Picture 1 (cartoon, rainbow, N blue to C red):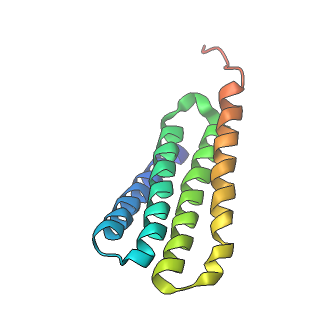
Picture 2 (picture 1 turned 180 degrees about the horizontal axis):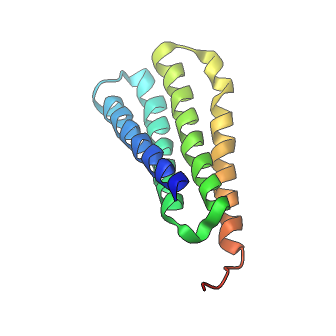
Length: 123
């Protein structure tokens, strides 16, 4: 499916950004910023993996794909918000971080619903 391929690419790029952010947090960030960057990178990486799983889970159908997009987007929004606070001093981004959190939580709940949905027999 084309949509799942695009989701897989987005998830993989999200994962790469998360590793880079985590590496910067570990080796280049000052102590005041390190925790924010590490937290953002952690959530972004976990949700990039979740998005990749959703992209590859054929039985998840549309709900699984939407869960993947919610996970990847939520992880990215959350990480960007925390990075903006830490690196740019944009404290207003503290209001954006919960949006990423809601997207990530929604992804998990939608995924649970997709997993509970009865599977259709294959032809």
